[in-house]
Amino acid sequence: MTEFTPPDPAWETKVRDSFERQGFMRYLHARLTRVEPGLVEIELPFRAELAQQHGYFHAGATSSIADTAGGYAGYSLFPPNSSVLTVEFKINLIAPAKGERLRALAYVLKPGRTLAICDLKVFAASGEREVLCATGLQTLICLNAKADD
Amino acid sequence: MTEFTPPDPAWETKVRDSFERQGFMRYLHARLTRVEPGLVEIELPFRAELAQQHGYFHAGATSSIADTAGGYAGYSLFPPNSSVLTVEFKINLIAPAKGERLRALAYVLKPGRTLAICDLKVFAASGEREVLCATGLQTLICLNAKADD
Amino acid sequence: MTEFTPPDPAWETKVRDSFERQGFMRYLHARLTRVEPGLVEIELPFRAELAQQHGYFHAGATSSIADTAGGYAGYSLFPPNSSVLTVEFKINLIAPAKGERLRALAYVLKPGRTLAICDLKVFAASGEREVLCATGLQTLICLNAKADD
Amino acid sequence: MTEFTPPDPAWETKVRDSFERQGFMRYLHARLTRVEPGLVEIELPFRAELAQQHGYFHAGATSSIADTAGGYAGYSLFPPNSSVLTVEFKINLIAPAKGERLRALAYVLKPGRTLAICDLKVFAASGEREVLCATGLQTLICLNAKADD
Image (cartoon, rainbow over all chains, first blue to last red):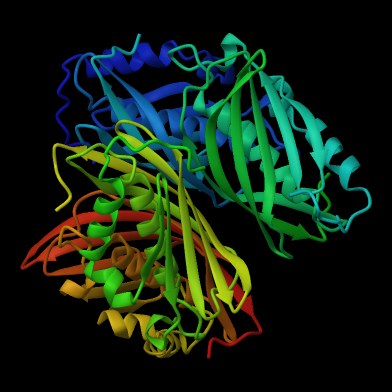
C-alpha cells in the first residue's frame, strides 16, 4: 500500500507543513505519527474535551482525524503547486471509541490526476490493545495551480 | 418535517441535557439553537482553533456538528430509557466552509423502532448570507433499556 | 430545483439519446419519464426478474435507476462535448421496495465545472400511493472533450 | 477474514437457497462462486444487456452484485430463523468496469447481533487480468424470528 512514487519531491515536507497550519488538529492535540507516500497516520490522545455524552471519543473527533489522515495521504501523491480538498467521506462507527487514544490510518486506494480515493480506518487503543472502531471511504480532489499555503 | 410525536414526553429535556454532557461540543463552542421533534439545529461560531490549513472551517468541525445534530434529531423521537449511537454517516462538502459561523440542520427522514435515518445539511453564514456547504445522510441506532446518562 | 440553465442547448436530446444507448436500462424495462435541467426521473415497472428473495424489488434495481437518474440530472448541466461518470454514491434503503413500480427522482444539489452532487430519491408506488423507499447522495464527474457517444 | 463461526449450522445451504430465489441475480446471469463464513463472491459475465452508454458494465450492475455479495456474507453469520436487509451502502467506482466479467468479493468487517458491516470490492476481469473497479461499505440488519423464505 505504500509503493507509490510521489510526483512532488517535497511530498513529506509539504504534508507536515500543511498539517502544522491546521488550527483544528492543534486544538484537538492530534499528532502526525506516520507519513509515507499515500499513507498517513494521526494519533489523538483522549481528553474529556473530546468526549460525547457517554464519555467516549465523540464521533466527530474520530471522523476529524480520519478525514485529515485521508486528505494528507492523498496530498502526498499530488503534484507540486497543488492543494487538496475533501469531496466527501463516509464512515461507519463499528465499536465504541473508548480508550487512551485513537489512531487513524488512511491510505490511497486509487490515485488519480483529478481525484484520489482513500481507505480510512480508526483504532481505539489502550496500552498495547487496539480495536478497530471506525472504517470509511473518502474522495479527494486535487486543485492544480493552487499551492496549499 | 416536524410532524412527529415523540414517544418520550421528556424529549426536549433529554436532548438538551445530553448535549450539555458532550465535552466535545462545549470545547468547540457549539450551541444547540433549535430542538423540535425530529429536528435539531446547532451553530458553531468561527475561531482559528476550528480551521484547516486554508483558514476555513475544518471538514471535521463541519462533520462534527452535522453528526451531533442528526444524532439528537433521532434521539428526540426515541422512547424513554434509550440512548442513541451513530451507525454511520456520509457527507459531501460542496462549498468552502468559510464565514462567521456554521449552522447544521438535521431532520429525521425515517424514524424506526431500531434505526432512524437523518438528512444533514450545513450552511456557512456571514451576516444574513448563508451558503449550503455540506449535505449528508446518517444512520442512527436506538439502544433500548439503556438510558443516555 | 430546476432553475438551472444548461450550457449545452442540446441538453435534452443528449440525455435522451444517451439513455437509449444503455443496454442495462432497456434490459430492466426502465423508462425515462421526466427530463429537466438538473432533474431526471426514471420509472421501473415491477417484474419477477427484478426481485430479491422476498419478492420485492432488489436493492440493486433500486440503486441502478437512482444512479442513472442522478447521472443524467448532472449530465443535463454539462457542457457540449463532455460525458459523465459516477464517482460514488451512497443509498439508504428505508422502506421495502414493494409495489407496482419504482420511481427514481434525482436532482442536482450542486453543479460544478468538474463535479456535480445529486440528491437521489426512490419511491415505491402502487396505484396512487407512493412511499419513499430509498434516499441517496451521488458524486459525478464531468469528462471534458470526451463526447458521450 | 474467514475465521467466523456461523451460529446457524445450515449457513451455507441457506445462503445458496436464498440466492437461488433472487429473480434479479438470475436475470443478470450472476453466479455465486464462493460462500464462506462471512465471505461471499459473485461473478457476472459481460453481456450487452448489462452495459451503460459507453459499453462497459453499468454502475448499477456493479452495485447490484456488490450489494448482494455483502448481504449474503452477513447472512451467513446470522442465527437460524432470521433474514437480512441492506440498511445502506456506499460505493466508489474507481476504474472503468470493462472486461469479460465482474467479480464481487464481500466480507464482514464487523458482525453483530443487530447490525453487520461489510467491505465490498468489485474487480473487472479479462482472462487472467483483474482490476479493482469498485470499493464500498455496507450496513446490514438482521431481522430475527423472520425466516428468509
